[in-house]
Image (cartoon, rainbow, N blue to C red; front, side, top):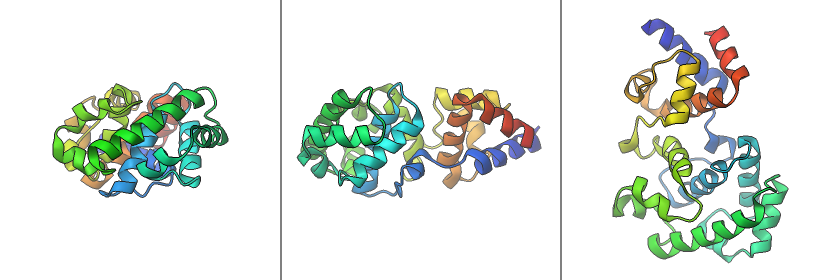
Length: 210
């Protein structure tokens, strides 16, 4: 069974193992800009909207210059709405534009624009929900992706990732899943499991190839 699990994990990484951060053009590392960009992405992905649209909207915001909390806060509400609309994020664009501005102001005010200070201040899992627009889903998305640079959260597989594990016949235990890949690949495995949870055809392809 262990060989089977290893085969499925390798196939997941090969077929679906692009992190959502990488898909959005974020070169994630433990520095202020990429961490803030991941926060924005987690915010957008947590809405009831397709992940591809959320990623496109994040890219549009970043392309418009809103890559750090200072620039996000300085942008006008209309500029944020326009960027979200360019990415196809139209259903929630007005509310999200407001929330992004308020969230950026909080990150600037409380953490000097640097989410590493949040990590130093306490438990990010408890502090993240204080940021406008970041609910339980947003916390899970952020921690799934950031575990590669904040290893104290690894292995991090939330309920959605565990649903994906069940779909492709892997154990529904974060500890067991974490032992299937190298530590640096944990965010990729988590992202792949979320994708197979969301898309039945992707799960079928993984099972067939493994």
